[in-house]
Figure 1 (cartoon, helix red, strand yellow):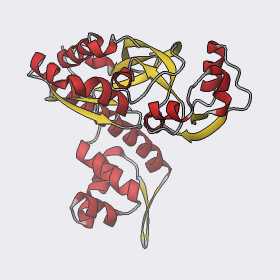
Figure 2 (tube, helix red, strand yellow; figure 1 turned 135 degrees about the vertical axis):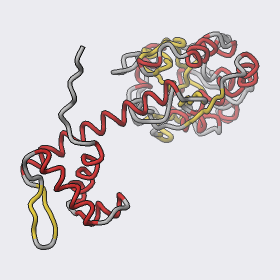
Figure 3 (tube, one colour; figure 1 turned 180 degrees about the vertical axis):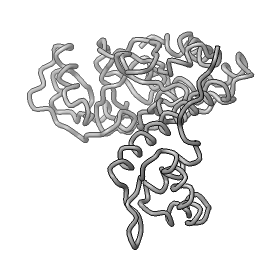
Length: 301
């Protein structure tokens, strides 16, 4: 079978063109590429001769893209972005000695970190790197292999595996109960409630499910992230809504209590999310299966 040669200019010419077009300057491109301005000019001329048309307007003090150059730049940028994504994906799949996991702070501190010794004993060949924070990892570009997310499992262009269902319950510090003597559903409107800015109806959902009437609840503070709301609750700021079994360790260590006892089902679950092309990776599947079997996720909440 005869393989036809691709009719595209050499890639190094395209790279020089992209830099010159982005800067709208041969001199600035030369600095970025560590070659002389005359070399940039010569290579651009070679590219234009290869294509059969000019890409720049030459003016006394520099260059600007013409209409053909602008159109060509759009194609080149898309091509380079595609090359970059492909390179990153291959490196993740075939040259990744460390399994990189992104998750929110309480998931790491309550579930993953307390069991790391057991994981390392069971899988000594897998090196873990745990990254915590409120930033939602973008698996298309971030240097992450697995993202632990709360949601409904329908993130686009990814594979997801449900780790466990979630229930929510109102929690507070033991100190808050002592200060208020008792915490009953009837006096919840006199207690400080901790809100989340991205879930401003969460307390109403909880109260409807619990049969509690919120008339004029006192708000203590609103946070933009879940981890901060749990920290604030443990320090006596007010009542927060916590996800279980993720926060079960707080109950074990008595840093948080559930004054109303009951938990209610949450419409979201905890998922491990990863790239489609990584679905057969041994280290990813080992980590996911280990989390699913975690004894810390089967505590009585």
